[in-house]
Amino acid sequence: MHGYLGLVIPVRRVEEPCVLKVSWTDEAASSEAMALAAWNGQGAVRLLASQPALGALLLERLDHRRSLNDVEIVEAVEVASRLLRRLSIPVPSDFRSLRLVTQDLCHTLPQRWEQYGRPMPQRWVEQACELAVQLGTSCGNLLVNYDLH
Image (cartoon, rainbow, N blue to C red; front, side, top):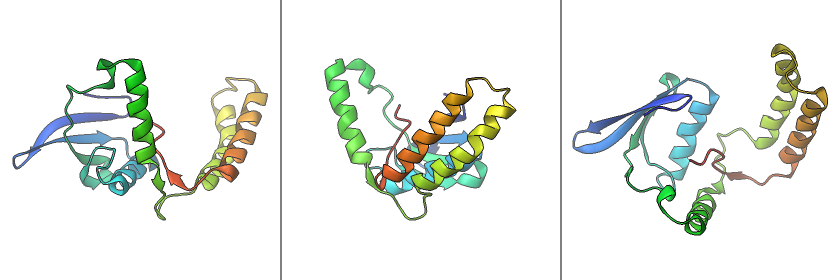
């Protein structure tokens, strides 16, 4: 199984069914391991071991036969809502604050816009930076999963 940035391979650790996830080594991969460790299997897959510098995570194997695609939309939304609330925990101190992330975004977004040949109107980039600053100063101090799938 693979996504855009990683490969997931079924493996076993002794008799325990697991998966090995290998992905690009970047800040997101490192943050993923830290977040999974913070959630400790409560609402998210359990992290068994990690080597973030290698982009490797050993994870518990989930039951692929259980999916929100198989239930009515109302039930799926209720389950996803409860899950998001469960994942919203106080952010551990070793994470970068959203305020710093949005500051970096505002600093690098115009450069990336230039680098990629100005693919959109400049006012969109400026508006994105303004919204990022607002978000960074008004957000809470929770660790949340923004890539729920």
